[in-house]
Length: 111
Length: 350
Image (cartoon, rainbow over all chains, first blue to last red; front, side, top):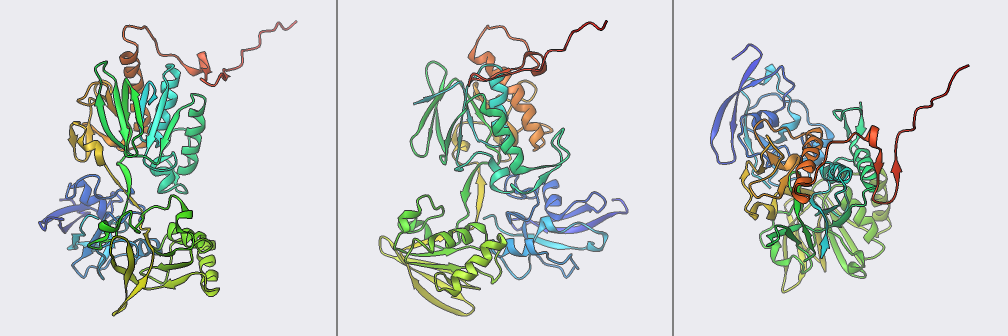
């Protein structure tokens, strides 16, 4: 683990929690971290590539980690997504930063 | 029966460029796509997004890229079966394939190239228990023939462009249009939002927000939807319910064609020609997988080019060919057009 890496917990769609190390210096977002660890089958996450246009990377934020404020496009996409909860976010809109050490999320069901 | 040399499944960038590369080898192509227009994801999902990694284009809008690819393929007169999903494939005794769509259109070709991207775009269906039993009985996920709704009561749900645009359009056709969205805000073109606002104040659109359709009921045909607004639940009587929540790609029936699938993609021989485990069926672009695969448009172009060379050998066994450069040979379109570089001027200077 390098200095710029952070530890996060991701619970996959089968309910299994994974401790993963995410780099913060590669401009990666949470959806990409999930894909890089293959925690959801390809073709079921990040379908639009990360443009907040498909909600396939929806996740529930379980920790009280401070996250970037939700922008209009993410908010609008979540307004049309299914299985949305108060703590829903789109993984593709959460860029990994050192302040996110300890982040815990759960992937929303595929829909 | 539609016959062609290469039957391409998927009319996205990779499929369209295949037409061009095949055309250089004098092979004809026909494309099938589940969407009603060519262009695939680029034109369906993000036509206004710039792409920065197409060689030679520092920046190009996804919609413009597909428009250009269509233009480039035109001279080779591709055929199209649009708005239909490739459903089954049957190998014939002569080695060719017959591919049939969900609407029964049949196509025959010696080579099939699957350029299906992430799959065919299927509507995202709201999570309402019995909704599937009303599909084709008042519940529609696409609007194919607006006339169907003339003088009928229609409930539309969704908050994007299609929900807005169809509400506007149907306000002149249907006897009653109700638009239901989970939020007060809509994600659409500003003029569409303003138009809906105007139609609402004229009483032509019944806008119910923030609310959600949580149930459908009726006998053989839909008769009403249950709407939840805050803590309150109520019924709206209707003849049609049209949920418009966008499209999501699914590999779909191709997954049952006997092709080797890995990670939702079709395994191919990348060392050679992107052929699948079924000789004569190739997979190119985002739909395939091989060690080191990258889902990039530019990789799809490369794969299409190599695939066409291999398809040529399948279609013309033993017939000689060497790679030609368009700068040298020009292009002879199937439409009779001829493109070539101008000859250099040779003139003495006295």
